Length: 367
Ligand SMILES: Cc1cc2nc3c(=O)[nH]c(=O)nc-3n(C[C@H](O)[C@H](O)[C@H](O)COP(=O)(O)OP(=O)(O)OC[C@H]3O[C@@H](n4cnc5c(N)ncnc54)[C@H](O)[C@@H]3O)c2cc1C
Image (tube, rainbow, N blue to C red; front, side):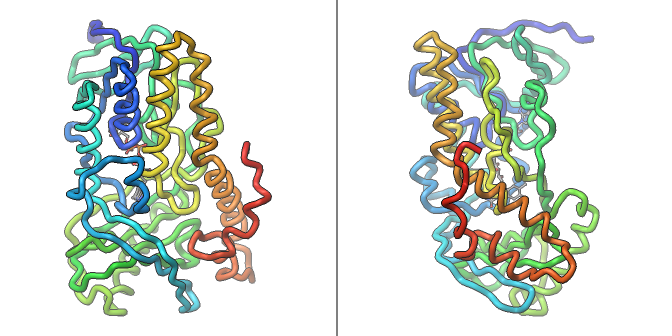
């Protein structure tokens, strides 16, 4: 067994340098905390596991440069299996996700945070955090730990959470001959619990499908059929794939995200939207709250103050997550019901229809 050596003591150690982690680090150093970010990756932002679509108002929370924007989006068109389609305003950006992640890390570092790549968290206890750096094991101590380590969070496991409920996605990037300024979303009974997307980004487009995990094995066939459909409908007359990716997306948040001096943030807390799977905006918002509150708690010398993290997250996006969770439960319960009105079900449960918002007043915001 390799010897565990000790390095440094920090105010805050952020585990994971995705959008949640770097936003947390940035907010914390701006309030005078001494912050280390670690990430197990060799290259920040890579591989990209994302469809790269965000609402335009994310720029209020994430100070990325225009270079990260591959193209702007005006509307979203939702396509139902009966051939009908519906357009709604959806001002957004298609981002270069790897550049976004790198820029957010760089901003945190320029504000005073430290970053250590190829550093994997392997144990977290009252003794501190143990990380692996190649064959070396190193112990790091901190007053607060922020677990921003994604959907399969090691930190969430350490605090005793079960695995998150997820949607599993497969995505190909294809050459796009004709530019478009809207995103397309397609529903089909075979895309169980999920949907297919076609998100343009200049000369290429991200084309993917997400489904409940029990359908993972059929994803390659579903995506291949979807690409044939796009070819036949002349959206992509010649299918040329330039990259492939995929991954899991949380679809039911943890209720508890604070454990003594450890916070869970972003996908590690399951904070992606339970219906759309969009998680970057909430990750950035939750990261900012976590970093700011942690630094303030340290300054006050009062870790109880960390409770404000859950309170502020609840105020920022708790209602939208609770409502989305209820809609997901309804969607999954009714998906396969024989004789059910599938189009009606999608209208009630997809954010692109006004029916989605109809019961919103009845949601318990603490839930
Ligand atoms: C196929 C797909 C498509 C998606 N499309 C969209 C979209 O279009 N729009 C959108 O808003 N969201 C989308 N999402 C969701 C979005 O990618 C996530 O919500 C977002 O990345 C969450 O950010 P995060 O910082 O919480 O976690 P992540 O971005 O996952 O970052 C976690 C970081 O932690 C590091 N890490 C993990 N374990 C350890 C460890 N033990 N030690 C050290 N470091 C560790 C990882 O290397 C990683 O860098 C998509 C997800 C998938 C899978």
